[in-house]
Image 1 (tube, rainbow, N blue to C red):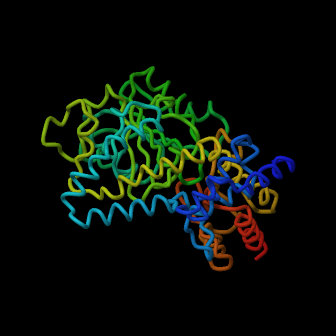
Image 2: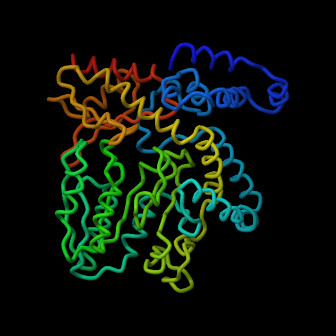
Image 3: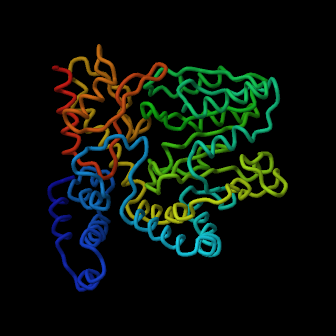
Length: 432
């Protein structure tokens, strides 16, 4: 951000209007400051705002993360902002006043408005969105619900998430379908290469292709739409694992040309832990068996058949609405630009250190927040432990197929000062 724009932002942030004064009677200080920061950033482009630490400081204050630990494993699960935490706790208290009344007659009535809000965020019809607990549940609903028979082929990669790999293997064992596994050499900025690996695996017997939008091990973004288009030319259905893409960077689900898509909302939407969504293209709903049996026709044309979970934590579900509000307050583009800026910030500082190898692209088309780093000659677990023990930086060591390194995942509450500590730790580890 230019110095003149920075001064303008700070000057505006200091304005204390009568409206602000009245709000201060009921709003906590962090919330008032955040409201002011958002308003004052309206004239600043997302690209410029990405590096404006004063603005993102106010975003950080919305979270309750520990000051004694630098959490750089948001790729596993993200903390929720305080407004989401408070909503969940409040709804939980309601439930315990009279569970059957408040859960089923009050909170459950909020599911349809929530479905509409999620659909608006996803860019699709509410009749294509089911609310569940995580991406594994959503994807396994599809994997086990697809009407496949012995000999039908499914194409997937060895770099996919283990739960999905094991689900397909179970269908292979139980139903006699045939899995065709491909292995991707990553990181890659060669779209033609990535698309070709999938296309080369397609045969006349291929019925389904499974595509991970963002490889969780190293943050590689795959060209989902191009792969999906090639699949559809051949009459192949497309299942997309969006666990790490939804609300991470700016896109709408229908743009991917997927038939099925699932995401964990407790990752990049910052919803309560144990919340997710499943998208099913409208015309496909009638062909999928639900994972949990419904009392009516299991092949009915109603997205709600995938929500038959029995008694569920509705206090978690309804707090998703606050997460949507928080996401929209920041803005998808602002968020994407900041996350990519943070990933590249630390990567730029370590990329020229001897023995340091980066396993993630710095190009925004092929990577966003998630990065992976390897110190050659050392095990990922060694660097992971060193960073935690010596610098109180929490990351995760990755050893999976051909991807080895430490995954580093900052978030909107992460500061560049936090990342400077990470850089210091990696530098010290190389010298140790």
